[in-house]
Amino acid sequence: MLEHMTDDEIKGAAAKYLELIAVKAVGDWEIDITAMPYDVRDSDGQWFDPDTDTMTDSFNLPAIFYHHGLKPGLGGIEDKPIIIGKALSVEKRPDGLHVRAILDKANEYAKRVWEAVKKGIAAVSSDSIAHLARLDIGGKRIIYEKNRPGRIAVWPLAGVSLWDAVEGNLRPASRNAIALPAMKAIYREAGLDFPELDNTTGDGQAKERARRRAEIRELQKKSQKILNNLRH
Image 1 (cartoon, helix red, strand yellow):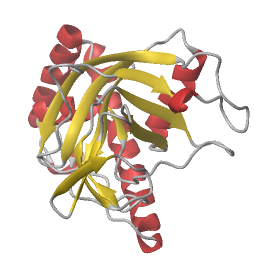
Image 2: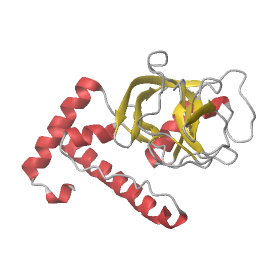
Image 3: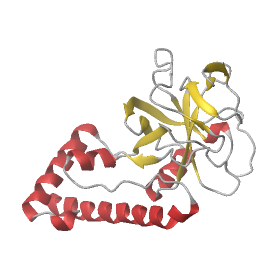
């Protein structure tokens, strides 16, 4: 953490951090999404793994939607699904498939999502095309069925839905699909220790997850204070 670094180490890391932001504009409405966490069963008893085929040749960059095309709360469906941003990259990592995206500052729903992301309470779910998706059941592939437990063998990643946790909004199938400000990657590149969120499910972990989110917010405040001092 910052308190264990010398002043020179902090200034050096922060200077590198500033340079990275200036070049890449990272952190300005840009987010890192764990869209498909690996080897974690969701509420339907289904899971992705590194061998899940996302058909990237045909679906290389997913669309970024608000709430699966639904209105906030109990408002029903939108006449047309709302696009709230743009995917920039898709990358396989040890914990799952990550999507880097930038949200549309002019979109009201994107603003809701951005505020939720900063608070650590944004909901995430991957969107696919049901008739193209496949489940692996006992070594045999079948057409995808939502409530049937099994490994998801084929999942064309056509979109990623993000939304804020307001009353009436859907609950995501997986608690391990998360969205964080892309600042996280820059902290690492700059040598700053950015705490990881606890991905363990269960009610007993709620306090620990809240503590880690608070730790993240505190680290962000400290880093911003350092940057402000450097600018002056």
